[in-house]
Image 1 (spheres, rainbow, N blue to C red):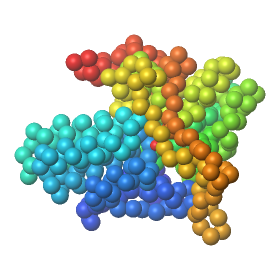
Image 2: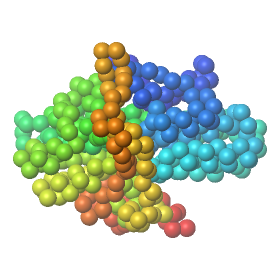
Image 3: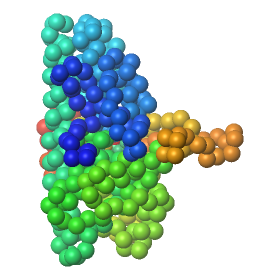
Image 4: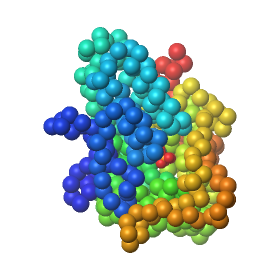
Length: 366
Ligand code: MRU
């Protein structure tokens, strides 16, 4: 997508300097800063401390982390160690393991001297694939938006989204935002309710993205969605996912479940934009089988924002208050209207997913 008219991806390989560069999300939405990642430690830190974030982007970053490590030490032990260290950075998004497994499976059979070049090539391919997957999700999601638009001529379709499943959470286009970008580009009027998404306020990233693309939106508190749905002001919810089970349970940013409950109570369609690398075919019950990341309580007791002196952090709770910070929750498949994938839209169920992805489902079944 473009920033001030210039096309960007969230991560890219700078071939002139032979380095990997990222949009450093610590400073967004206030400042655009580009950071270079070189060592395995830097890749680990970038994922743990959320300089990069969002399930697909975490996977792409890990693939480049493996490639940089192979350039330094292409031995078997080094590959295994890089897999382990990158895998332990964040526990919930399955794209991380998906990308790491793909790298390991492709590189282990090669002789060490061939691994670095192959690893970089694979990382470039994973990024390009992500872009195409998300483009496709956008085109399928656009059909749903058009259907709603046809029922209310002259009025905007009002969408609600949670967290940032936008282009900076992927390599490009985003998942939940891709239908929005495609709708805007096709001239279908939309308005997006953007959940702030405490504690880290990823909604501010979504607002920055939508604003840069000229899409009408409003930044709302996490508690406002149910009220807007009761008043008939939300036509459709679209969220992303960090891991979706083989039976269609959706694990996404904390608070997603509450939006799904409110949507069900108000008859609002609740869709999940799901790239196939985010499906964990080995897991059936999201509630008991998906590890939920616990992040630092400081993310809850403190808040970061822009002041006259730059970006700074303030404490919002009394001294000594204990914080709790589960970062994801699970929305059971029964609350999901449909999954928007790169191959089309399906029910959030085993039949729905296996119907669209028979190749992946049977591979997982062994
Ligand atoms: O903790 P984050 O910011 O990495 O969480 C991101 C989300 O929950 C996104 O909704 C999800 O990764 C989908 S991104 C296309």
